[in-house]
Image (cartoon, rainbow, N blue to C red; front, side, top):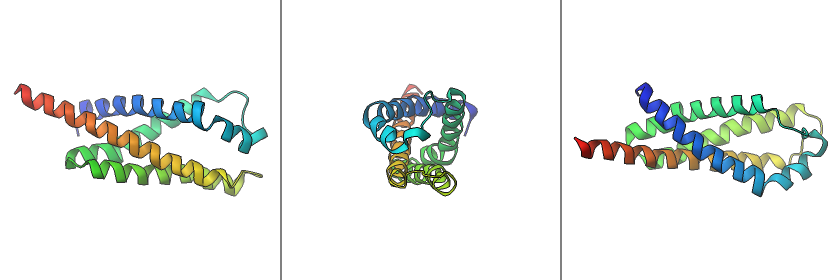
Length: 142
């Protein structure tokens, strides 16, 4: 995988991730998190920590899921590996929180883990399709 391919996939994945995650957080699940997390929820999010999470998560998603799927030319791989990556990464947060944060709501764990799987599968699949179209455009020029 070239640096150019990695960066292109990263940028597409970042755009898709931000749209999907902000829609989830702002429109769908905001009330859910407020209701379940209550006083555990910060008044203002730590933007630096959020940016660091997004940057690391997306780098892992591109490296471990999207680029291999593009090399294999397999949308199915992007979808299923993306879901697995999202499930594992979100489970790390949710289950660790459940283990060490007093009163962490157990009801949130399966919802958030499912969202991680859906989000990563969606980001991986859309980024795969865009990468395939870009590769097709490049091939048709030559």
